[in-house]
Length: 213
Image (cartoon, rainbow, N blue to C red; front, side):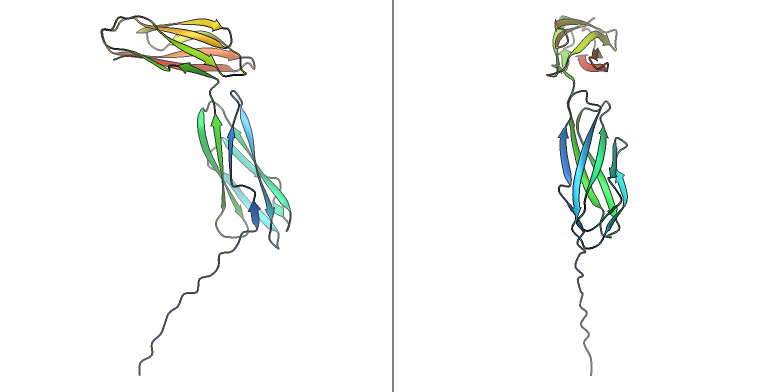
């Protein structure tokens, strides 16, 4: 007589985490020249027992994060405050915060997206000549972001194959930059570093680019 054994699997329910987050992602746009920005995540302990935050990690040295305290009793609200250091960054950045508690299960991942606009913009950013084109100067516009005043005073070229002349149109707001190749007989390239100073005393460098090709 044979006996058939039927193996069955019992699926254990996932343990619900007690910390209920108002949002797990934040998107921010900083003001031009802003050096740092604070991000705050809010939560509440919906469970029946205290919750201890064991660890908080970020994926970049530019982001620091900490809770307002370590342990949250049932019904208590809390926050994770994070400070993003802008530095010389430009564009969109995504960083993460990983929160580990004593509840077990997977750590909570919080997402921080920060949009850092430029203090000024060069239009167009690049000027070009074809080999053997007439070596006439070409002009780009340097426009300071609204609400700012930046006194630009220098157009420094990284190659002797080009020269650049800075022409104020509206001091602190708009400039023209005339870029001229010394010759177009052979391919050449250079960056033009436009240097200025904001009212806050910050040094500003905006780049344009020139090519013969």
